[in-house]
Image 1 (cartoon, rainbow over the protein chains, first blue to last red):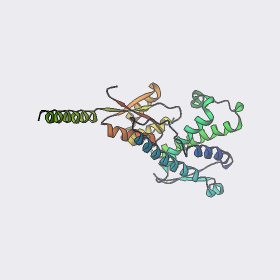
Image 2 (image 1 turned 120 degrees about the horizontal axis):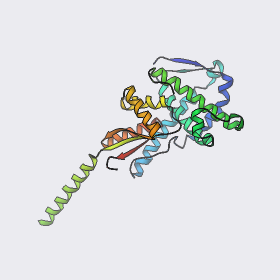
Image 3 (image 1 turned 120 degrees about the vertical axis):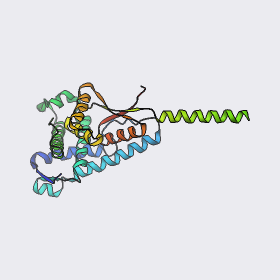
Image 4 (image 1 turned 60 degrees about the vertical axis):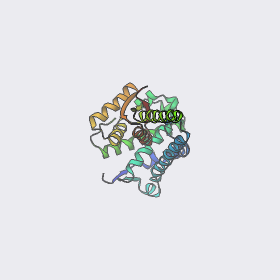
Length: 153
Length: 100
């Protein structure tokens, strides 16, 4: 994979960073997915969970870290072979958390079809939804850059 | 003498039972979730299991339309490793005994 630079609309993306960071903070101590560890071994469960949490936190740090001073100066973020997969995973984790924390009431069918009553949503929920869509767009971009054969959603 | 022979027989039977259990077939099952993109799921399946595009897409559609797909089956240790890796990619995956 080559390095790619993506120019973003600062005015649209900057307001989403707070809700993304809040979701990231939540995921510092809980897993984005419901955990189902095989068997009844408590030690296995603890080890499994802590290793997943460590990986999840590291990935999210990388994603949030992209929106740094350079981003605010240029509006651009860059992907390369070293950060692509962590960013993909982080996007998935944050989207799962955004749905859980802010968007459950909206309904999964509405989320999937993008038929969401934006005008009726409180501002925080609107931002969460915008972040949810933004992260999906990032994921699509990266997946297709990694593998152009994968059909789009 | 007879008690020792009986103990020895029991140990052998237990060891055989354990060995048989470890050889049992386990299934890695991916369950649907309302968030992850289909393209993302296809990518993960290709990466984790080495599926080609067609097979990865087939399993993804099975998850999406039927709620679940058995993506791998084999020995428990490898099955656990796969479930862990799928969890790292935030897919909802569980382990099931082939006997269930």
